[in-house]
Length: 389
Image 1 (spheres, rainbow, N blue to C red):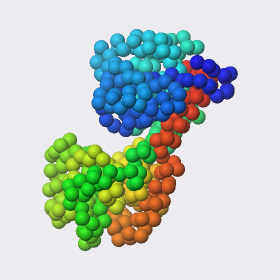
Image 2: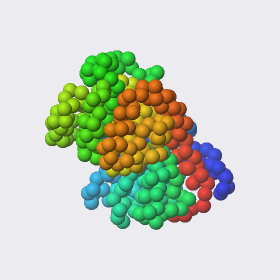
Image 3: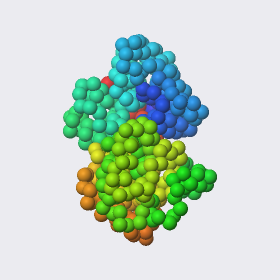
């Protein structure tokens, strides 16, 4: 690889290794695929080390290489990965080692640090969320560069771990503009969803809360707020796999009936085409009880021109502009939540203006392309900088 003098930008191909437990589903996994494809497209070599999973096929299809190792298994046998990782880093002359999860970070860090300083990979870690605060999680603060997925997470790293230097960089996650574009929605998917959810446009605006069926997503708070506006015309749709927690889903269905909401609340189940789901709804709900590190749903909704009603904490404070791209309500404030919903339901003109502004806002700040470009720029700057590890 051709390098310029320290302090100058890097020229030539970088060999980049990303490590995470597995490639099954989730935001971390999607981000790994997205950045890997971007690196390859821009002339670099992308290698991902994980225990595998159904997303490997898409990863490889987009040009990355995959090496299967049990780096996410909490098993003493996983320690045997360390010598193999060391060998990989040396053989492939890895420039950047990007550690995206705690257990792989421990193994990757130990393997890299066993290599002489001048030839070892430069190390990047990413804080994807609010890890438990202990020495095990502290490994994620040990990169030469530490990526925080939001300003909130950067503050968390500083306050809880005392790591506050300029080497901690905020790089927000992004939405995929090739998927979340109203003009690209499959009309058949749209028609199928409309029939499945029994949405005919005659029962007022559609309020959609997409998310896992868990207490943390605020479904019960949403039902309580809906009870306060049941005199208005609307339809609510809860999107998520009810089989994940069937007892919780059944309790929600019972509560909806007890609150007199009846069939106005649709339990839609899993949806594989969220772009089409956003097109069908008028307002997206993000009612998480605890702060989310970023909140991809709110960004994807805005990308589809749909305003968001969200809890005023966590990533929503960074991704939603109050009264311009959505509404924010104080955590656990049912009345405030209901008032925001009521305004959103009654004011169609405001909803549409907000939706247009929301799409422009996230396109300027939160695309996958922005995320990938900033990540690659960080790598290039790191390779050109003096070593700190």
